[in-house]
Image 1 (cartoon, one colour):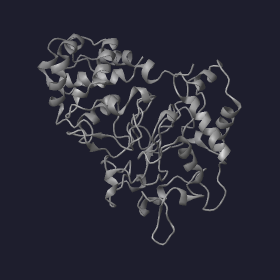
Image 2 (image 1 turned 60 degrees about the horizontal axis):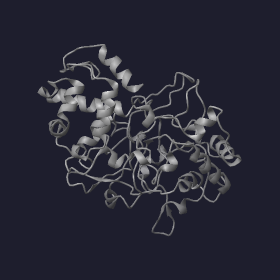
Image 3 (image 1 turned 90 degrees about the horizontal axis):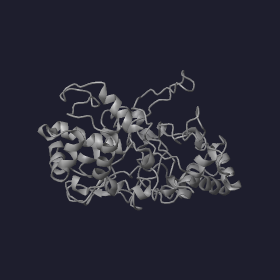
Image 4 (image 1 turned 90 degrees about the vertical axis):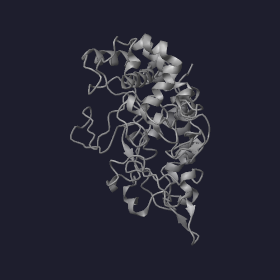
Length: 397
C-alpha cells in the first residue's frame, strides 16, 4: 500500500529535480512500487553503504528482532571505524506507517478536537525527522552510525554495486545528477519500510483476537484489563489498545512524555556527569533547545513486538519486560530500587534529569504515588500485563 501511495504522489508532478517536492516524479521513468521495495530491501541490508563498510541499516534494525536492536547492548556501535558508540537505544521500525509529522500542538480530530495534546509525531526518539525518507537519511550521515561524509559519498557506494538495478528502476541517466540518484536511494529505503508484510503485518495473537479468530487466556485477559485500567497500569492512556473506527491499534498515541528513566552508566557518553540526553530539547535535536518545558520528553513508542526487545526505554537501561512494567509501578513508591544512591545514603531520584526539569515529569497514574506508599500495580498485575504484552508479537500461529 505504501509504495502505491508514493507512486500516486509522484505522478502528480513532473517538475525538475531542483526545488521540486520530494514526491514529484523527477526521474526518466516512473519507479514501480515492487521494484522500489526490492531495491530498498537490498540497500537496507548492505553494510557497504556505511563509511566503515561494516554497518547496514539491518545491523541495528534487525528483521529477526522486529527491526529493533539485535542484542542487549544499550547503544550500538558505528561511525567511520565501526567502533563508535551511539547515545540512544535503537527503536523498532515496525508499525511506524501512521506516525504523523511532528507538531507542538497535536489535536486528534477523531476524538475531542478541542483538546491540544501538545507535542506529538515525528520519527526517532525526539521526533526530529518528519518522514520515512528523512528518517532514512539520518543514520547515513550520523557520526556514530553510518558516518558518510555527504550524499555524493553514498551515491558512489551505491553506484559501484547497484548501478544496473538503479538505472532499471529510475532510468538510464539517473547518475547524471547525484542529487537525483540520492533521492532515488532514499525513496527505495522509504518504500521498503512501508512494505506491509514486513513492517506492519498485524499478525499477532491480539490482532487475531480482535478479528474474533481466537481467544485470550484468562491471564492475558487480566493483563489487558490491568493495562487499560486507569487505576492500575493506565497504559492505554499513551498506548491505546482498542480498535478505532475499525483500524487496528498502534499502541502509541504518538505523543511525548518524560517518565524519568534511570541514568544508564553503561552508555559511554554518560561518563561525563554534565551530559544529559534531554530528548525533545537536545542534544541531538536542536530546534527546540530553548523550550525547557520539553526537556526530558521522548516519543512514546509502539508496544507492538515489545516482548522481542532486549533493552527498554530511550537509553536501554532496563533489560527485561517485567522490569520495564515494574518501573512504572515503583518509580515513585520504591525509587531506591531504580535510582542511584546519594552521598547521604538517600536516593538520587531522577538521576538522569537535571533538577530544573523535574517539573516536566509525568505525574499521572501510575506515577501519582509517594515513597513508601502502595503501588498502583501488584506483582500479579505486573506479570499479567507482561503476559498480555506478549500477545502483541507478530507471527502468531
